[in-house]
Image (cartoon, rainbow, N blue to C red; front, top):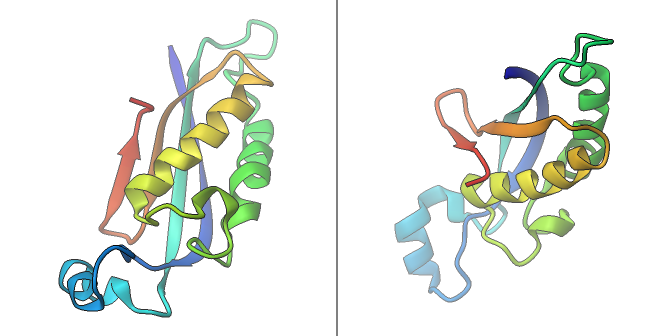
Length: 138
C-alpha cells in the first residue's frame, strides 16, 4: 500500500455558537470564537490517498487529478467564505474543525470513488500552525 498526499491552503471564517444556548453560555464555552461576526483562519488541508501503484503509470493517483479534485470539490467552495453562512455543506452544522473535516471527507470520498480505485486514507486540517485535526473516515 502506498500513501500519497496533497496539501492545499485556503482562508475562511467561522463562528462557534450553539443557538440553543444563551450568549453568555456560548462565550463561556467558545470564548472569542463565539464572536457574533466570526473570526478567520489560514487553513491548511492535507489529503492523503492510499492504493497500489498502477503498473502502467507508477501512480496511485495522478497528483494533478487529485489537486483538481480537491480544488473543485472543496477549495473553490470554502476559500474566502464564512463556513456558517456561505458554505452549503456546512449550513445548519456546528462549524468546528471536527465537524468540518468529516463533511470534507464525505465529499472527497464520493468524488474520488467516481474516478479511481485509490481511496482516502486520512485528511488533516490545520486551523492554526499549532492546532489540527485528523480524520480517517471512522
